[in-house]
Image (cartoon, rainbow, N blue to C red; front, side):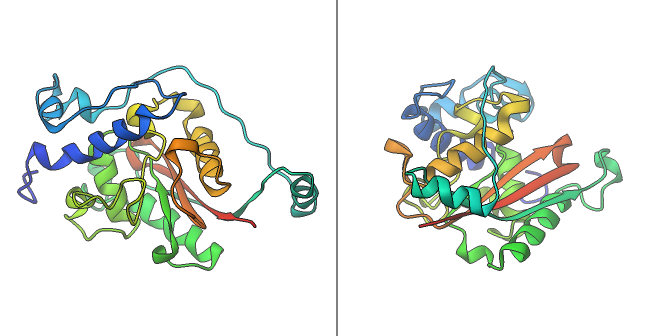
Length: 236
């Protein structure tokens, strides 16, 4: 906020969109829509971070099945939809924030995103969904920048014109994300993959993004010390 001259209000749309999406997710922890006034008046945790900047830690479980292409194709022929893991990569950084190259850049996220996209043979412009690790609105902001969807210092403004909604050019937190679906910690990354699988197979119900082909799924640990990115691809 000091470096780029932004205000608390500039972060609010991330939380609002997440709660909108979580409202129609039957498995979400928080079924509650919020507006900017509610966001700005939420309890202060550690100034300037407010309660509605933060995800609720909760219980949860999720599971995925990984298989060879041959087995997956056989399952698909029996009516089970399949998606392809087109890219999978990890990026790391110093756990200590004061030892990092730049305090306001998630180098681990940038590295894992670049590697995953290269494996998939696509560009960031091909991504239809970015299921990011929205643990705090500031992580959403820095993740959008690290993945290349926003310029340095401009991630906080991305989405103010509807770009991150289910019908926007880059939907995020499509089932509510950590912010509204909840953050079951150890299960969170698999939750993200399950929800993205549903999007790519057209089984997301009220939360369906129109006709996605590629999705970038990103899970972060240690405030950016370890970042794993997957590119998932729809298989018709």
